[in-house]
Length: 345
View (spheres, rainbow, N blue to C red):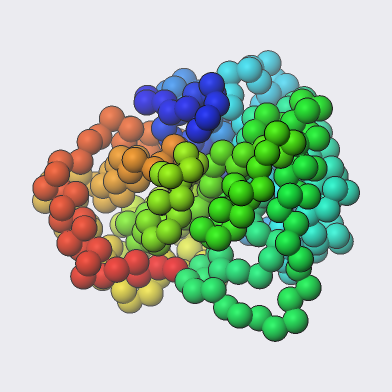
């Protein structure tokens, strides 16, 4: 397993990060514990979760993912072996069950961190992230920014960082990061940092063979400002495993269970998936290996967040850490990208 430093820190994280979004919905507590056991054995020291999880978000299961991690820490007594990341949910109609306050006020942030620490049964979170912006912008499958009249949000980048810094000083969190953020939002947070406001070390955005929009704007920000991408959905809800090809609907597949998660299921995505499948097959790889190895290899990726609902899937995903794509394969990937550019938002 390769490791990278969280930018501008002395913390090393595994190139592959264990995603936990399905625990409490598609996976029970025992399965979550088994995945953490196996991941740690394979050299993964970086786990990512959120107060929102599991997804799809429902009041009945909200926070269960963090609770499963907490019971594992208590049972194993190995908190110091894991670099743990979590997130505060932003305003949305699907977060009504979490809290009534929708802004990133001191009260909201304090309450969210306190709740996560309690569920996780830990005294600190290594990387605490804003799950999505408080303002109206494009995220979660929205390709372009929309201009909405009557927005009530007022710029609060400095205030948010100052509240987070108080938790850094208190030892509740060690570092902070962003998620589902735009180049403008990322730069505004970076401009707001000072001796009393921490730097946003990372940004967790979607990135895969079907969605390389991060390369337009955000990749340069990461390069120039030393911010690391934590790439999520590298398999595009499992579409880049190939299991949905030719109209297949595997019984326990995420899109089969939750068909509203359809951003990777349009005709252009299907066309691109078939082309990437043929490329992988011609080079003696599975589509999963091609897709994850591509993300692993990007210079702006600090860690690639993989999720699995079975240990077999988890093993295949982790094994991609040792695969290096040839220049010829990378060239063909770019040619396919030119033919079917970013088919998923």
